[in-house]
Image (cartoon, rainbow, N blue to C red; front, side, top):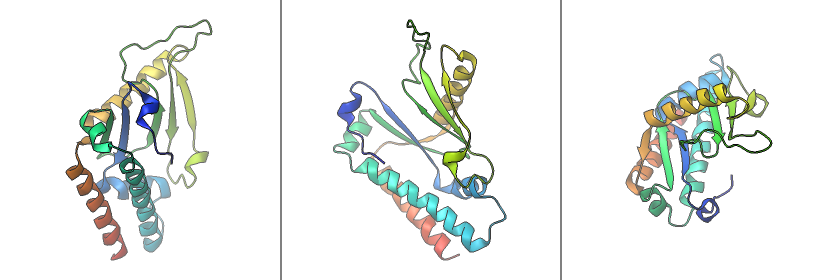
Length: 178
């Protein structure tokens, strides 16, 4: 993980979507399968929780993070659904869809698909879609991102962030005592 310097993205907003701690078990079933021995499954679930904590720690280490959250320069939300596709995109929520240039290249987004029992996500299928050359797919994925984002619950202040930390840590403890 790289801690982002907000000055590097001047004038932009950073959107971060995490799986709700209540949906991590179901996400783990997708990623690791349902036929794991119980203790191994609990270990895998906790691995996902620890990755969430690492992500939150990186976010919270940013100077003035709660000011950026209050100003909506950084937006963090929690998705209550299974995340079967992850996206990395730039300017995805801007109204202008196509960027015209002599090379006929538009905006791009990367979609990574998590298949059942995808034990090595880096080996799972992923594609880069261009808004000029692959307009239909770009629009489809953009709408999917917007739906996921709009359905997610915002984390908009320090109190909600601390509650998210507490929930994740409680889930880890629950798994350890299973």
